[in-house]
Image 1 (tube, rainbow, N blue to C red):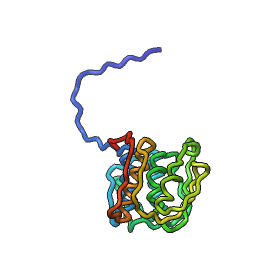
Image 2: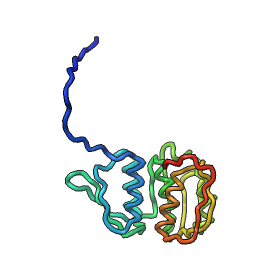
Image 3: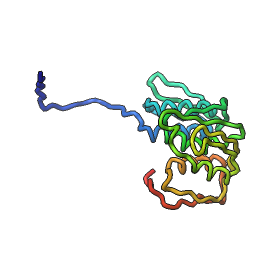
Image 4: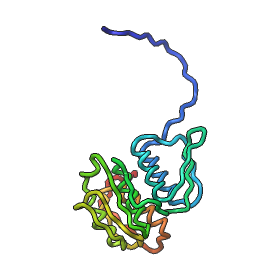
Length: 194
C-alpha cells in the first residue's frame, strides 16, 4: 500500500540550533577541562561519544551542569582526577585524545573502552608516551591502558598517518604543561584538516 503526500511550495521560517558535531564536541570538552575557569558549550552534542567525553572530563576533575536552555556549563581548575578508572566508551577519538591529556596526572590511571574499541590497535601510546616520561602498560597495544605521569614535553617525532586524534591530544597536553622550546615533528600527516 502506497501513501502519497502532496507538498506545495512554501517559505519556512524559524531558528534551528544545530548540536555540535562529535569531533568538535569532544575537542571542546578536552579544551574546557584544561582551561582553568568556566566554559559554556551551547547546544552540546548528546551522542554516546559526547556523553563519554563528558564523563571523562568529570573523572579528570571538571564539574559540569546543564543550564535551563540545555547548554553545558563546565568549570575546571585544570586536570585533577577524582577517579582512577576512566572509560572512553566506544569513542576512538576520545581514547586517542584523552590518553595524553590524562597522562599529565601524577596519579595512576586506567583507561578503558568497550565495544569495537577493545580491538583497535593503540601501540603508538606504548611507543610515544615513555619518551615523555609516562609509565604505560597496555594489553599488547590495546585497552585497558594503565598509565602514570606526569607527561613531560620533549622533542618527539610522531607518525601522522596513525592518528591525528592522538596528535590533537599531544598538542593539548603540551600546551597544558607549558611546553617551551620543544617540537613535535609530524611525518606523513594524513588528516591535515583536523
